Image (tube, rainbow, N blue to C red; front, side, top):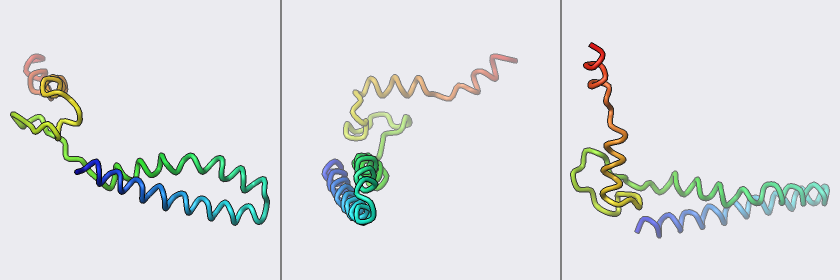
Length: 103
């Protein structure tokens, strides 16, 4: 479900971005053909990347937190449950343990 929403948002952003770049390129091309071509070659490839970033910002994916005992598979962001546990253990805040150790 989320991937379909993400894809729809990406397509919308991509289409809008390409329309804006194309129309701006045409206006620049009326003034200078070479400058219009340079604009389209330099700015055009950035549209899919910006659409990707916009889709990631608009469609948020809820990720599992380390406090959950058994998170659902769709919230693990492609990790296996064992890998998720290992990452949670590796990123624990051990500041209390370190403070006690220094005393």
